[in-house]
Length: 444
Image (cartoon, one colour):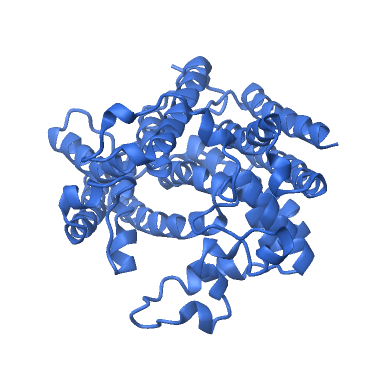
């Protein structure tokens, strides 16, 4: 039964992108990004664990079957919602693009500059480059959460500059700003050996470059690039203890299979099964409270409200985003390891139980509607869609909490800048029509 469910999951992960590409002819369709990552998490990873004979060491076959059943239903709902949301409506219009480039650039410089200043402050607090990245799995840090999170604004600066209205390849200062705003997360990705920042920066720059010029890479280049990026991220994870300014690079390994076949409590699939099983046995679901806390509770500084999660009854969020609950040891016989991620399916189950299925449909529909508006209207929607794309790795491999706060931090400033730019364009008469990219355009 488990193998049958694995096969069904694989079929969904293949047919979803195939149907999306055949219907909409866009290699940047949401399913083209989400489904390959889902296939790795929910097909390739458990397959390799079974092949190695270690999956049943941590979970029972019954537990894994239930998990995989939820995966199949959730992936079907996500695919159906995405295909429905992608369709063009009769009421859809192609508006004039009114954004003033100067205002858009100034907004990008301000927002990106704030982000760069915040990152440099956290870098100084960490002892400079040598202090932050002198040891394996390094990174910058500050005790002030707002400073840590403000570094995401450099990505907003890049997205605004490399947008249909903002791109200005003949401007040297524009190039300098793009390079400066790309530097922080590029360093975090390479010297910190972090797969999230690596994915974010590659997708941010690569996708924005094509969208800004109303072009697409060929399907072959897209597949090869995606496979190459995936292997590179596995390379970083495999060599996480050997990549830093003071590390011996001669110890780097090119065999990345161990990171997939390594069976322990931190394995995303094993941990995900454990979280779903624990939630079923204890009957504990959050019903949206964890997600709401990312918007209502998280923004309050600990310096003002030290016990904010305990006071709101969400103390579980202090470890692993609360996905494991407090009873995993008694249910599974092993405990959650700090920093382990359960992945999208388990995280949504712990939050919504069986309501995860319609929630997945809503997620697929929402992302695809934003894709439709991005390719048809451009403007803010292009920026917002790329933000969702760069956060897709957190959605699939980590948790909703990892997506929500980053989405808010990047989306709100981007929306404000676009509104100012559009208003300035209307007031000064600097109006021009941009040809929208048809959803049926293939590549260039």
